[in-house]
Image: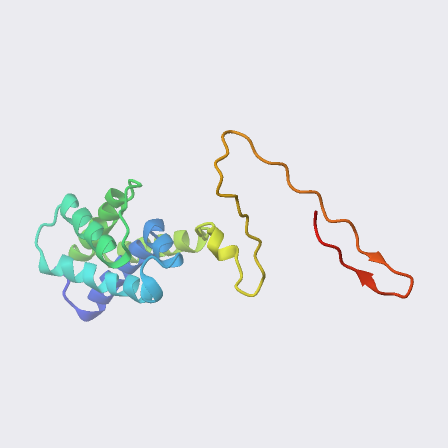
Length: 178
């Protein structure tokens, strides 16, 4: 097993490449599911996942999936159900296998491929909610309904008030509504 510090750093870079090219994690980070420290949580997740591989022998795909799903739920309040967890787990197991076997050039090629995939990924953001469009500085119109019950019909809007009439001396007369 490759145990040098340089090769371990390469494995960490492999885990980073897999996780940072994963759209599920990037959507969670981009949309603030992890709070204001979402990017730091994603970086921390790289360290935790690589340590998980070092601390456990003969990991199975379902174990890696469960571990990553638990991290996403705890840190990003996100349940990943898009079918990407098995793909991410297989990629992580592949990177770990390459590192374990000492196939460092192959591992570097995998990292390069994943990094290119990350740079080609379009940024996805959640559509703004209606509360995002409102500004506190702008006056807002409110609709009010009468408290009398109306069954299946709506009252027509009242006619607009007549334009103010100017008197001969330049004064505007305001009249009471009828």
